Image: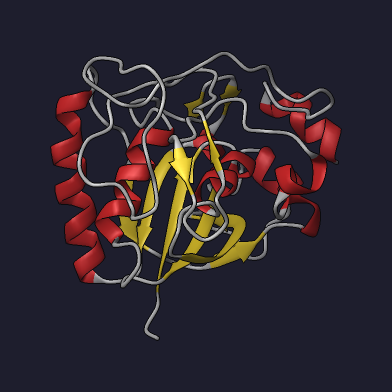
Length: 225
């Protein structure tokens, strides 16, 4: 089996991992830091805004099950790519929207997908699209954070889904999103909820998990230091 990897930045990496690990065809996920200029940064380093890193998720996937274009559609749907250096209540350059590609083919596909997705948004897409550089895994307690702690994302859309392999299905909770989702969805995924602006995705209010430290980068850093 031939697999591919891509790295996404879309705000808090806890929520990004929660969404992508539920996509059929995604084989492995790992949260970490990328796009900066220092080696082996810690979470405290990244929160200081002095390293240039973004919180990211590295995704390994089977393109025979889910295509790169389909993963891009999930990416555009799950967050607001027009926000600059923030995502919802989380503010700072580490929360910027970014795609770190692993091949020229992925680079071209991501740029074309961004151009097509722009029609769904009223403001310019701010997503950084660039070749992947070093990826630094985050601390163990960040990996699969929501699965370990029983929470759900508070500032991401979870596309209504039905996982063919596990029978998992749920509506689409979120705090801030509800942008129109177009194109094909990965096999095994099904849209649910009331359409918005011609979309099959919806958003509903959900507060940040108690004690998460999310909301402001400074308080979050202090909570996890």
